[in-house]
Amino acid sequence: MNDSLKKQRWIVGITGASGSIYGIRLIETLLSQNKDVHLVISNAGWRVLNEELGWKISDREAVLNENFGQYSGSFHYHPIADIGASIASGSFQVEGMIIVPCSMGTLSAIANGSSDNLMTRAADVMLKEGHPLVLVPRETPLHAIHLENMLKLSRLGVRMIPAMPAFYFKPQSLDDMINFVVGKVLDSLRMEHQLFKRWEG
Image (cartoon, rainbow, N blue to C red):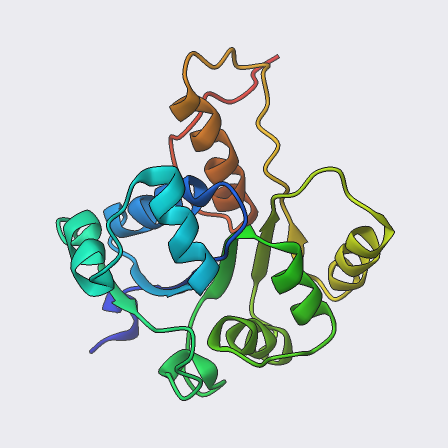
């Protein structure tokens, strides 16, 4: 297939931090733009999907197909223990990776090179191959270790986009605030979207 006709491949990770809707909205947006999404969800992430969004997670493949099967893009689910999955290798070409929301435990593992599951391994591959890596930390308050780990990764070129919705565009709903954060992620990756109204002065 001609390279220009290939779908862009993106990895999306969802951890057990609160705010799983951010990851879901990002996946929906990427799939609606005909992207190829490789999805990794931690065990804690699955629990949060159940508790925050009411997802019935006894059959994980089925619930993903139910929520994402109608989009023009394609998605591939990789269990977090599958350390031999395609996205664990630098020879598997992807555009980049976004972990949203990103727990402080996952952020710490990435910052310290501890790639003991597929999510942290895939993030490590992004670093070693020089691909974009975006983390959306979701924790408050932050202590010094959190901040030091974020600084370490920022110095390596990792983009930190904390889940901090703005108010200048006068959000009218929770959806507006979710879309703003996801839109900022897409902005950082130079992807077009219409998720929020931009400031025009």
